[in-house]
Image 1 (tube, one colour):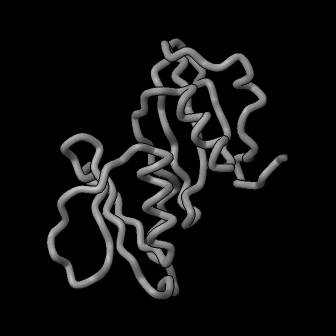
Image 2 (cartoon, helix red, strand yellow):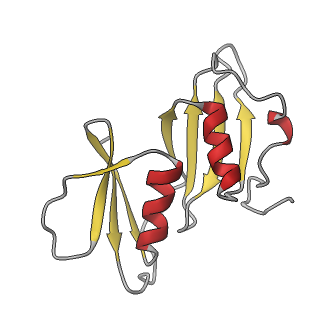
Image 3 (tube, helix red, strand yellow):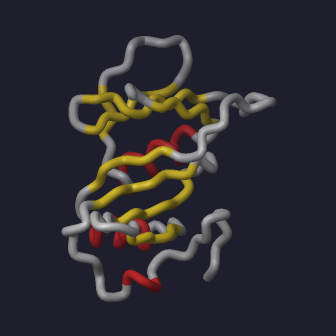
Length: 139
């Protein structure tokens, strides 16, 4: 897998979500004749964002969600809480037991963050977040 592309009519909100909340960094992008940016995880441009004035109809594709390996489980939850971004936490079943945090970006794309099972969770992790699998706020 090389990258995902998001088409958005919320370019600034999308940028803030992926850089300030999720820690991706804006990096080099070819001089395309449309607004947008490429966001990097390390040296890899993993997310291409294209800005449009109006979302296309019909929308293309059927992306269920995108997932990123992440670090800093407690700190990430604090950033999400501080920004009032609803999310849900799952402890994966089986032997590995990774931490998974799901939320929606400003465009309605579901994003999953996967943290190592060895990361220390806050004591209140079972009551943190406020979003169901359907995206509905439960607070």
